[in-house]
Length: 168
Length: 101
Image 1 (cartoon, chains in turn brown, green):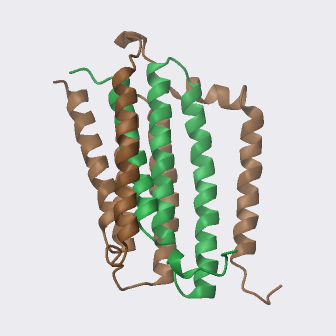
Image 2 (cartoon, helix red, strand yellow; image 1 turned 135 degrees about the vertical axis):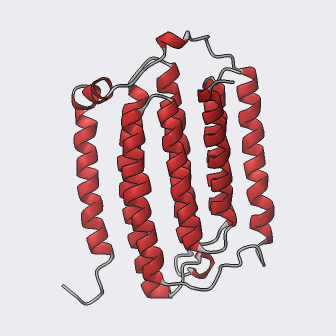
């Protein structure tokens, strides 16, 4: 077992455990902190996949910006009492795991039947920054511009949505 | 054991299933948004794995776009949560029945 294999096992097991903790913990703040862990471990998996730039972006955008936004809103709403989500919630308790299990079995069966072409380790894609970002500014230039427009629309939308009523 | 595409896809599928379960089980808008983020993250992981084992940068470029859209979605979603909390003093989806047709 090489170092990469053991790192993969560690990151994926920790990822799944943190994701389970996001679901089961009764406090929203604790859930958000475990979600930060999920994003961080995903960044570790990106590093194992040689996607270094995306790993940095993952930490900056997800574990940084998005989680700060989540924690800010949770603390703004200031709900101190724990959410006892498991009580009086039988349909969700039965239906949620059922859907998850069905999905998991379907994916497992698909993965079991599929054989991927053998890839020699030295021909695997190593994404350095120029190789990854050159298509962004050449082939995918129009989607980048549309994404910029979308972010502008989101900014304006947030300002409009959180405006208090009666104010101009 | 050689870690291949199958293993990464399995982790991605498990993460997606857990995100789906989070959306279905928790009746709190904040937790539903967190489950959505987990789903997007699982899709990103699958895209990066395909990019690594499929010799192309396109998967990583798509991940870049998904990240931008996830940021916009989180901002809009949390703004809606704040607006709903101002109206209904709660973040439970079961208590927002005014939208029911």
